[in-house]
Length: 179
Image (cartoon, rainbow, N blue to C red; front, side):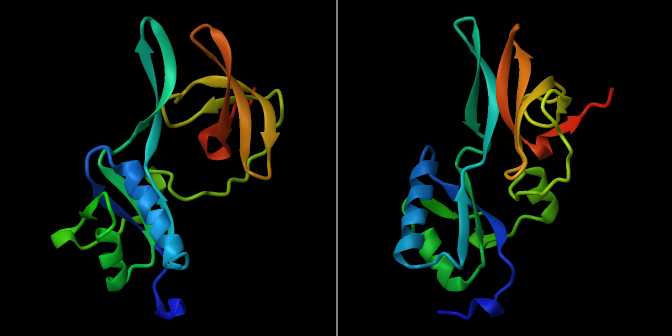
């Protein structure tokens, strides 16, 4: 194999899949990574998801939905030999880019899609009021009911549909409201 110290930093790329085959393509890629010992080259494969509120039979419910149907994201150190391995994986039709060659996402696109974990220096305590920023619950106000500083997450109770509803959120998704 190639000396990975000479390769570029890993970047995010977009793969096109057959309709409805996103989960199968991710599963097949993960099996291929394990079988061929590619963990140093392909670091992460994911289906971009979003939380949306759907109403069914008069009841509202928060559900996970594919952000970009028929597409998955892969973080990797690109090589030509990996290109062949990936595009020949079951469920994958090819990379998104000119002539099917991968075009990495820009830093701005990666940040906008929240693909990278960002460490946030946030001082938040149980009982504080916070405002949710971004996503389906943008601008909702809630109260912190627990804090996991090590994983940069907290549980926030938000009033939704007339009832208090606890939600797990990242520190990047909240801002503290100073009274």
